[in-house]
Amino acid sequence: EDQVTQSPEALRLQEGESSSLNCSYTVSGLRGLFWYRQDPGKGPEFLFTLYSAGEEKEKERLKATLTKKESFLHITAPKPEDSATYLCAVTHYNQGGKLIFGQGTELSVKP
Amino acid sequence: GAVVSQHPSWVICKSGTSVKIECRSLDFQATTMFWYRQFPKQSLMLMATSNEGSKATYEQGVEKDKFLINHASLTLSTLTVTSAHPEDSSFYICGGGDRALVRPDSSYGYTFGSGTRLTVV
Image (cartoon, rainbow over all chains, first blue to last red):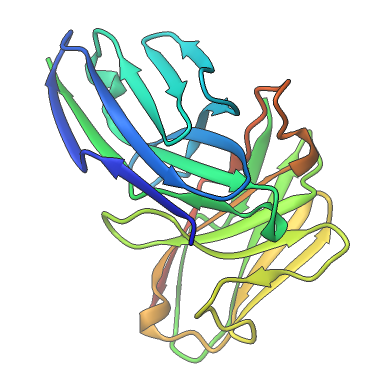
């Protein structure tokens, strides 16, 4: 059965304190792994797509990496506006390409 | 960038009535549409996936006769909650994209609507 597990559930950082979020996955025939940001009461906002082990993508203070079993979202020198829930999702070639989300990591960055 | 317009953003309805939620993709064609529900402090739970030219595939435990999904065109998908009850109160989110563009040489990602807060009283 496909599984996506994110850790930690919640993370509190001081402004400028770098850290990483983890997404472990078990899926047959991975087509892509996605990272999204979700603000309260809003839909997810697309950040990155990763496809193969060793791949890295960067956007401002965020960098996403992928291995065969997990993905990391590294946040460098975060700011309060980075506070949000970060969601990891996977899709595969089978079953109509459905998109399965992890439970998310709620990030809070204090000034 | 790609935008999915979801309406209404919130709705309150009486128990036993039906509610329709609409999602339109702007500036792109969504060959695949996902419908999710989200409870407070929880992640998105997939309800169904619909692909162009085929009926929606519902997840286990989701009643297809209660949650009617119509992927009417490449730019419009609707979710109708029929005979709504208080336990159907939730945050419903749609997401769409072109599955064929999810490939190793692209940075393509599915685009989500802003969500609909449904309250059944």
